[in-house]
Image 1 (cartoon, rainbow, N blue to C red):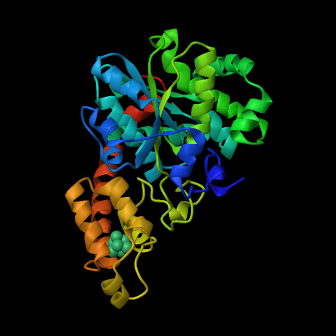
Image 2: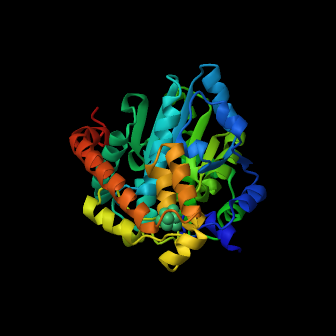
Image 3: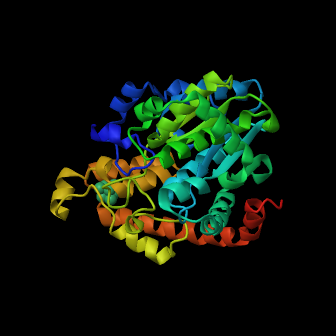
Length: 367
Ligand code: SF4
């Protein structure tokens, strides 16, 4: 199996080298300027094509235009603190939820998958989930138009997974996911249950559902779309973002390698230190960098600015050209980014602290 194909796996850390080949291979549509302009407003992830591909995103555009109901669905595996990769998905849910007052957000806490994949007992993941939901609220989710639940406590998701299992074979699962232990196939069926939940009668019946995810989750989307057709649901739409690289650039940012990820609970000083040791696209010496310019395309620091921390497009363009022409050195970028990140973390952590009680009530089903 090629490295790129291996990257399309929800349970591994490989980064794809070439998104375009993957799109062609798996039939993913590109995000075009025309599509972006069809939305009533944009987000930096969409404008900058960090969200680079989709399946049936026009269905959501149509729902917004016609002022009809749609759902945005995603979630988190509660195995640790929110990191920049999980923050990206949260920002997408918040953005697509905000585009219409007819939208509803479904946010799944994948505690069954955390148990199956990471061996985390449900009591432990419960406490982690409370913190994760506080992060989500602090980032701006409108929780009054959202359904946040744990997989282990949503019986309907489990029932759907069981029903859907009647329509899949081992061969189908192996063709989509490769050979895996049963626990992964079961987790996949539960995820299909999560994705289809907004279309059940209990949640308002069939409707378009948008799932914003990393490209590594596409197998779940393909399986869900196959199953949707068999059970007369609307095939879910998806928008795919590029995977957030680890700070050292060698794989996708994941909780499996804490030292090369940045979490929203990091002490701001620690986060600054991590930025100072992140991979850049700088040259070997100052003289070389002044003469040849840097390589922002390879630079994790520039990626952090693009994907997460600099909203102003003109500012980002200026940094890019200053880097390319050698007018800027990596120390300039790291110092600027360290200031932005530590200020963001201080404000975010203060907000999060104030939302912990609400988050607990939501996770424990008391609001
Ligand atoms: Fe990256 Fe900035 Fe260095 Fe360019 S100057 S390679 S953008 S850190």
